[in-house]
Every structure is written in C-alpha cells, then in structure tokens.
Length: 436
Image (cartoon, rainbow, N blue to C red):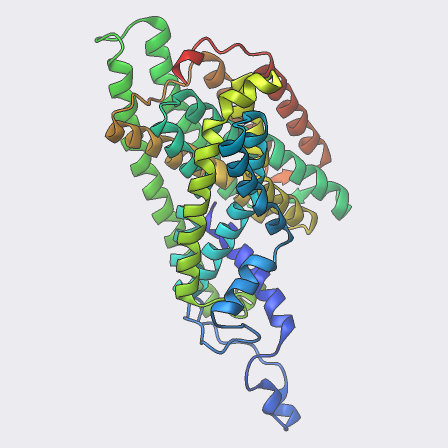
C-alpha cells in the first residue's frame, strides 16, 4: 500500500486511542487556561513516550490487545482444524477452506502489528514498513507454492490479487462511498492515482514481452530466452519499485516539513495523537509470530488446492484467481470500503490500487527471483488469457481514474467487469495445468 494510505490507517488507531484516555498530565491542571486545548507541536515522526494514554504495556496486556480485540480472531481455530483434518482424513475439500479461513485473521493482525511498529519508527520509516509487509500473506503463499513447484498457482493467485483489488475492491469502494456520502461525485488525489496506474502499465509491459516471445515462437533460444528476459525484467521492476518507494517517502517527508512551516493540517494534528497500543519489541515479536503462523497454514492451503478442485469440481484457475484473493484479503477489502463510506477515498485508493501496484511491481518479480534461486523456472509469461485479462483491466481502471473523481456508476462498472472476469476463469480450461 502507499505511504499515505498507511499513514491514515495509523491515524484511525490514534483517534480511537485518543478518546479512551487523556494524555498523561492533562488531568492534573487546575487552571482552566492551562487546561485549555492547544495545538500540538508539529514534531511529526517523533518517537512516542512509553506512558501513552491507556496503552496496557506488558505481555498479558499485549496478548489481550492482539488476540482478543479483533472479532476476526474467532476464525483462527479453523486453521488448526484444517491441520487436524489433514492428518486424520486428508479430506482436501475441507482442508482448503478451513486453511483459508484461518489465514484471514492472521493477515489482518499482521497488518495491525506492522502499523504499531510504524508508530515507533516515525511516519517515513512506518510507510516503508507498510510497503514491505503490506502483502506479506500473498508473498508467503507464493513461496510455499514455489517450493512445491506449483508455478501456475503462484502466477494465477498473484494475478487474481491484482484483478480483485483493481476491479472488485475499488468498485465496491466507489459504489459504497457514492451511496453513503450522498454526493454526485467524490474526489481523490489524481496525481497518486495516475502514478500508480503508470506503474501497473509498466508491470503489464513486463508480462506482455515474454508472452509475445512464447506465442510467436521468436525466441533466440527456444524455452530459455523468455525465462532469461523474465528474470532481467523482474530485476528492473524491483529497481523501479524501490525508486517509487523512495520517491513516495521523500514526498511525504517534504509534505511534513511544509505542514510544520505552514501550520499543518488536520491529518498531521491527528498523527500526533496516534499512540501505539503495544510496545516496539512486542510488535516485532508479533510480526514474527504471525508470519510463521501464516506460513504453516499456507503450506496446508497450497497442498490442498488440487484436492479441493477435484472435490468441488471447480477449475484450479478459478480457485487460484478468484477464491484465494477474495477470501485471503477479506479484511483489507472491508477496510477500503469502510474508508470510502467515510468519504476518505484517498485511503481506499491506497488500499486497492496501492496494493495492486505492490503485487505487480514487487511481489511478482520477487517471486521470479526467488524461483530463480530455488531452481524453479518461474517466469513472467502468464500466458495469453491471463495477460490479456490483466491488460484490459489496467486500461479500464486507468481511464476511470484519470479525472480524479468517482461515483456510484463507476463503482458499478468495475464490479460488473470483475464478474465478467471471474466467470471467464470459471469456464477457462488452463492448457498449462500440468505445470502446476
């Protein structure tokens, strides 16, 4: 996700915490003049003090906040039930959905721990953390699939994440925001949307070239040139994404400095009250715990895909491209719609388009490089049907975002486009299924 989206999500936690208890020392003033509200100092990015509001520091307090605060955590036992079923009956038709349900709360809590750690590192480094861990769940699942040699599952699941974020999530956000806010149009920062759209088109370029070589049979070394091109293009895409992150963080820092000199805005003021709920090292520990937890469940999830496809009589392409992204990112999808309903469309774009940019420019090329190191022939040739679907999707979204406004009809268009794409994958017979 983009830096701005991560900042606003941290602001949301700050608003909640600031209403729970006053800042220490505020209730000790007897003079009304001294107790009057004052503008907070603009030291954006400053490290928070340890005694912050109602934060309950300690191991048990941390467990209470992390494990019992979110109602989604009620789904965590589904993952253990999947492991039990796998060892007792090996019924893949049940192992797959239970593993998927078990991963949903872990992915949401992983994002929570990342945001908490970002509050200690400051605004700029916090944005970098969110950019790194924003799609950690997809990355973990991809690595497990690579280890199992399921290259098509990796390609289709990452493609599906881009399609669902750009069409379904953004469409629901536009549609829900238009209905809830009662406005003819909602506005967002056109510059950020255009920049992300350009990166998505660059990613499509990286995918189109190997596919063209493959289908036109014009490779210099048959079967090797497209793979070599994919690895070279992946390295270039990773460099481009690193430059994009640096550009975004530099702009964020300059905006912070400008707000300090010009009195700031409400967003910067709210950031001063964004207090962490757990300590820095507790956040680091929870990051490691949830990543390992997701890794375990992902292992069972990937192994159960083929069995679930046979048990449900559903194509693997549909499971990988539609079911995995929708259910696996359910918490993130809900947050995008929630922010749009509150007329914070820039945050919704950060979740939807920013996440798609990260997957296309970081997770996909990183998977190619990781497969290279594992000795797996993972490449950027997603084949004709998948590449064409992505190209058309990116073009449709880029055209709808170019004017910097949204409305209900735009949202409805995106949702209907996603239904067409999903139905296409349901009837799609993947000719490369043996390569899973």
